[in-house]
Amino acid sequence: MMLMKTGKAAGLDGITTEMIQHFGSKTMSWVLNLINNCVGTYSIPNGWRKTKVVALLKPGKDPKVPKSYRPISLQCILYKLYERMIMARMSLTVEKNLTPDQAGFRPGRSTCRQLLNLTQYRRWI
Image 1 (cartoon, one colour):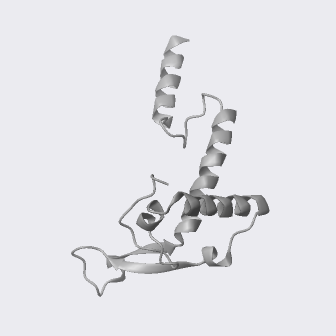
Image 2 (cartoon, rainbow, N blue to C red):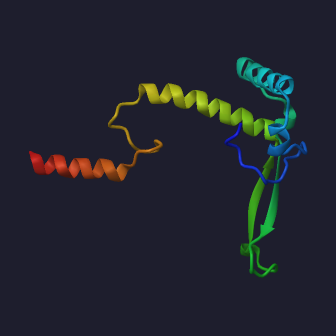
Image 3 (tube, one colour):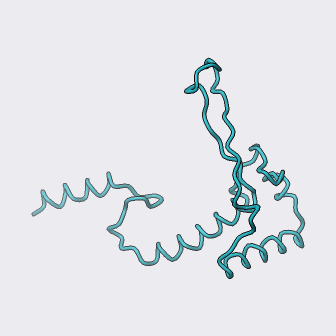
């Protein structure tokens, strides 16, 4: 929860990250139970499925030009929390089952390093 960015716009539910960070332990326990229930039943509340896309004008750009805007999606903060929990749980399982040779799309690893390893191996043989 503490890794979620603060200072961002609220979603359609009007809840911000700052509000959740000030929830008491009973409320956070309720939120955790709600999310675990969603995971266990493979379903989420309908309100979480809604996203509002808002166009923000880029600084110093002409408001008459469509390319001057960038879209942002406003999602329910509880859905974002749900997504992060799912991702964290999946990442643990995936990390346990990947070989050390798999570097692409993994935190702290890069395909560039693997390319360097391959080049060094080629010189060695």
